[in-house]
Length: 81
Image (tube, rainbow, N blue to C red; front, side, top):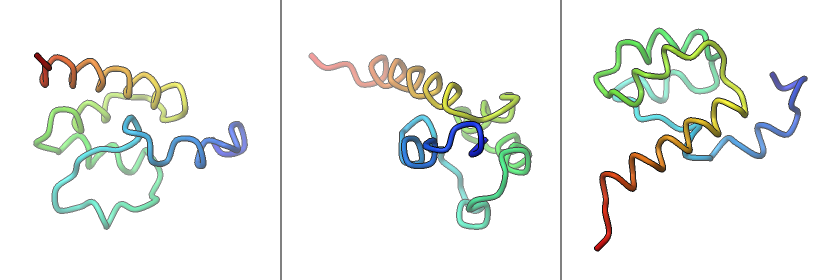
């Protein structure tokens, strides 16, 4: 992925769409590959994290799509009057 998109780490590492909530395993996963993390995501009790296990690959396109979806969820959850 880095060879195909060298700036992805700088552009996307800390974007909301690239972050997920994990419980006790967060530090242990670190920079492991996405395929390894998918098994952990599948076992999560958190639905937004569990959904990541169904994604085939992880790159800029998937990060942007997830971020857009999370923004919609935020608006629906935290409506401002």
